[in-house]
Amino acid sequence: MGELSARELASICRGRLYGENITFSGFCIDSREVKEGNVFVALRGGRHDGHDFAQEAFSRGAVGAIVQRGIKVPKGKFYVLVDDTLEALRRIALYRRRLFTGRVIGVAGSAGKTTTKEMIAFLLSKIGKVCKTPKNYNSQIGLPFSIANFEEDCQFWVVEMGASQKGDVKNLVKLAKPHVRVITAIGEEHLETFGCLDDVIVGNGEIFEDMQERDVAVLPKYVSHCYELKNVITFGEGGDLQATNIKLSKEGITFQVEDVSLSLRVPSLAVLENALCSLGVLKALGYNWKELSHHLANFSPAPQRFHLIRKGSFLIIDDTYNANPPSVRKALLSLSLFDGCRIALLGDMLELGPMSEAYHREVGKLCAELGIDACIFYGTHMRFAYEECLRHGVLCYHSSSKEEALRYLSSLIREGSVILVKGSRGMKMEDLVREI
Image (cartoon, rainbow, N blue to C red):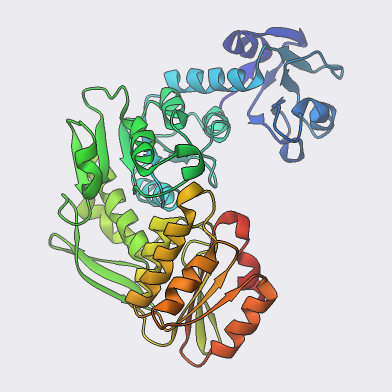
C-alpha cells in the first residue's frame, strides 16, 4: 500500500490521534513480524492481547499503533485510539476497497479454497499484477488485514473467504465486494458450528449476497440449483466447463476441456476441479481461457496439498493440511487410480458434531468400495472407519498413537507402494510424513 499520514489513518478509523503526525506504510498484527515503518494493530484474541506487545512492535520498527486503550508512545511515533481495533481494521479494508479500480475475485467453499485461490492468482499473473490473501488468511481478521496491505498498483485481488458458521462469509463479502464470486466445493464441514449440510450450503452461498448486475458467479454444477443466480458459470460434470479423457499417473493428471488438452503436475481429482473452477473465473472476467489454460502445466499447489514425495521405491502423498468428508472422498478416489500397492493412512476428521461417527464409517466403507489395498486409521473417530473397513474385509489397522501407526505402516510398505497421508489440521498428520 502507499503511504498515509497518521492523521489520515485516525480519520479512516474514526479514532483519536496521539503523538506525531508522520507517514507510515503497511500494517502488522504480529509484533514478531513488524517491518520498518508499519503500524501495529493491537487485536484482542482468546489467548493474547495485542496491547501487551505494542512496545515490542515499536522496538522492532513500528512507527504507530492502533489501540483500544492508551499506551506509552516513543518519541516521534504515534497511536490512534479507537473503540474496537478489529472494527478499525475493517474500516481500513473498506477504505482500500473503495479506492481499488481493478477486479476482485472472492473464493469460498468447503474444500480447495487455498489451492483454487493460488491457481486463479497464478493464471491472472500472466495478464497483470495480482494481490492475493497470503497463506490461508481467510478469516474475519485475515481478510481485512490482507486487504489493508495490498499494493496500490494491482489489477486483480484474489481473496479467500473462510466460514465456520452462517454469517462469516457475509461479513467478508461486505469488505471485498467481489466482481467474480466463487464456490469451490460444497460438503460437510464445521458441522459443530454450522449444524447441518443445508446450513453449509446457505453459509457458503452468502458469497452471492448483494451481487451487482455485472457480477458473475462461478460454482460446481451439482450445487447450482441451490441458489437463485443470473450470471452463472458452472464447472464439473454437466457444467459449462467439464473434464473428459481424464488420465492419472504418478507424474500428474491429463484431461480435456472442450477441444483443449491440458495437464497438471498434481495427480489429484480435487485439484482438477480447482482447475476447472479457475478457468471459469477467466471466462467470467472475459478472458480467453483456452489461450491461458496451458499455464496450468506449470502450477504447483501450496505445501501439504496432495504434495508428492518420492522416497526410494515408494511414493508418499502429503495431503495433510486438513480433512473433511468431501476432501477425503476426493483424495481416496485419486489414490484408487494409482498403480501399485495403495495405502491410506488417515487421521480423524474433526468438528463434525453428532454426525461424526456416520461420516467416519462412510470413509471406511469407501476405502473398501474403491479397492484400497491397506488402511491405517489413526485417532478416536477413525475407529469407526476401521470397524466399517474391517467389516468389508479390507486389510486395515486402528491406532491410537502415531508411533503405532508408523509400525503398522512399516510392515505394509513394499516396492511401488503409494501412501496417502491425510487428516484434520488438529491431528498434525505432517508429523507422520516426516517420520516415514
